[in-house]
Amino acid sequence: MTEFLEHRPGTRRVRWRSWLGLAALLPLFLLTACGVNAIPTYEEQAKAAWSQVLNQYQRRADLVPNLVETVKAYAAHESETLQAIVEARSKVAQTQLPADVLTNPEAFKAFQDNQAALTGALSRLLVVVEQYPDLKANQNFLALQSQLEGTENRISVARRDYIEAVRVYNTELKTIPGRWWKALLYPDAQPMESFTVAADVINAPKVDFGTGTTGSSGSGSGG
Image 1 (tube, rainbow, N blue to C red):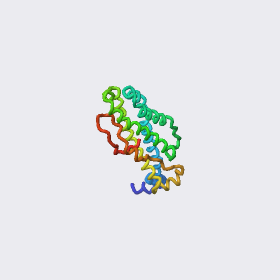
Image 2: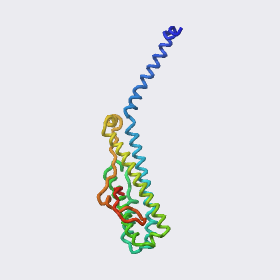
Image 3: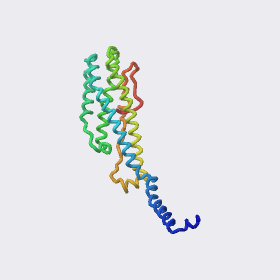
Image 4: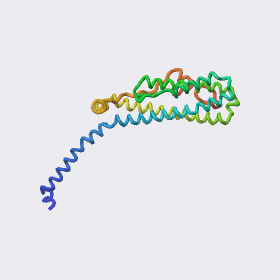
């Protein structure tokens, strides 16, 4: 009976259609296995990491006005240092990022330079703080100190994650099969810019308003 059913014409047609369906799906499986979706996936991951970088830099910028006012109350004579922070923060706030900032070397460098300038200005504030014990003991300042230090740590993590995401994305564009998929399906995909670190930024003192000693930041976060 079983052999008879297997040789019925209707049964053969059903099995043939099943094989055709599998054959039609095979190219889709092959495309997926070959990474046809890798470029847009990595691109979205890099953009998400960039958003976190912007969020953390904005968090830092929002702390600056209160920080400056608090320091000013105890160190009014340090006007040059405070003015440098105000100007650096203003330049950051006024920077208009174009939509293509991640693939625009000039725009990305301008963003990085402006953030590095603010990092350097905040770092130099450490020297001012060490000269004013009353300021270091002020509760409002201690709260701002804690928030700023936490934000600097989050900036470092966000930058690291972005750098890694861009590395993966750019590598995909340059290697096979990513190069093939770029030429075939994603001709507009362009390598993204990543952070670089200038020597003077590497050697800037850490933004640490505690009682520790002033030192060079070996981390090279670069603002």
